[in-house]
Length: 137
Image 1 (tube, helix red, strand yellow):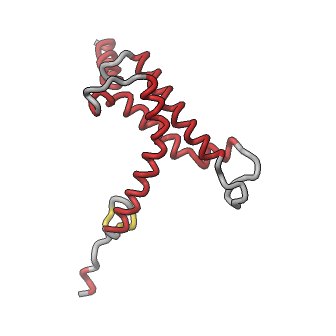
Image 2 (image 1 turned 90 degrees about the vertical axis):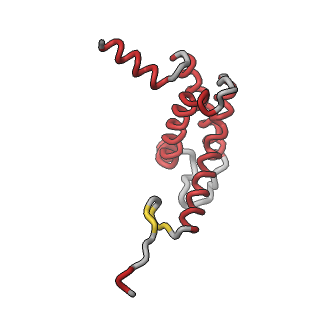
Image 3 (image 1 turned 180 degrees about the horizontal axis):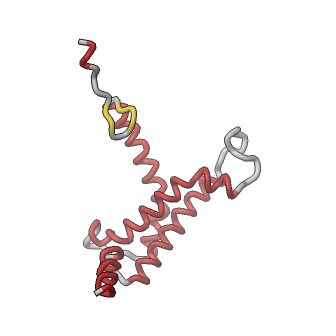
């Protein structure tokens, strides 16, 4: 019974694809994502007071940890749900790599969209709308 549960659970996590192909897809998605992040780091403003003069791995990880975590989560989700999102398409390793290249752009777009929504609806913290104070009436 435990082996059936674990096989079923893995099936839910990776979907209908083979485990080897799903893991390879995730690796190529992450390769594309990290290339995009590396280009961004390479084009950093070295004269900024918030950026070290010389490249630092510790600064890189600290400064980009949220982007990296979100890229990993997106890679897992896209590898798992690609056939659900695009039923007429089959995920290839090249498509996975290209998706990884655009993940960071998608995150920037979502960040801008979040800011626009906050401004439009006067939201101070995301998920909490500013409610009018009814005690002042």
